[in-house]
Length: 184
Image: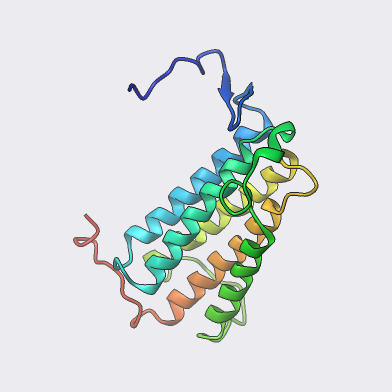
């Protein structure tokens, strides 16, 4: 099987459960930016020790983002084909992020002033991921229907990225991270 199909050479892209749209329409912008957010979280993950708590959190978030991308890549007339938690974001997924934000927030004192990113590589990458998630949230608003909770999920995810970054900064010496030579 070849990686290229040539079917998008006309400026359109195929959607989940069928249909084609222009590559610059709302859905591809939204799910493409979620894909970018997932990649940014992957860079953060590359900087932490495999098997650590933060590694597990980041893997779970990347898996959730596949669900968000599937929903965003589906035409409204095919939403009935989506499967909650597999190809459609659920309220339970949003609530799980809220629980995680609350749990992680209890591990450090919140900053009392604006944060300047870059205290650690992991925290800085989580801040990059946060900004990409925020952009994907804005783009998802026009790409999804009224019953979708994708926008709420992305909103909470950006809050979680901020929280994780502050946790990493607060526990700089105790959270396992990989050195530059270990990241290869």
